[in-house]
Length: 145
Image (cartoon, rainbow, N blue to C red):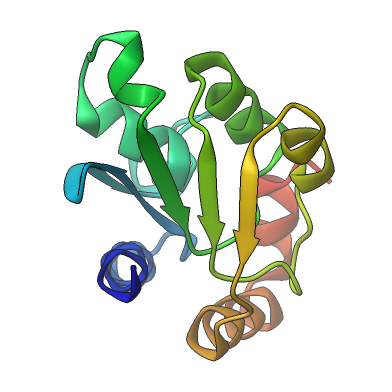
């Protein structure tokens, strides 16, 4: 599992290097990464490409049973939009790098039967805390504030 969170962190760092928001995610099915993604709202001028959404997009189309057997790893607690996609596709498990800098819709996910595991990973926390301190306006835009 550590390997998959590291892959999500690589995506987050790449997003930051591109001038974007450092949130990364990977969708894993039976030990294989199906899709990797990072928040690309800034890079692509997108309204919806958060890290989780990008990972799902990059994974491509799959039968419903694939999503129902997958785990989504994300460096940050998923927002309402990304949580909605998790619920829509029936992804049963989400591993979150941290939720100290932003607490998303974890309660909703749990209420709907999703297994939610939060690691409070120091690298994930430091990456987001540093970004938020350096770019508060961009961060607030990303979370709709």
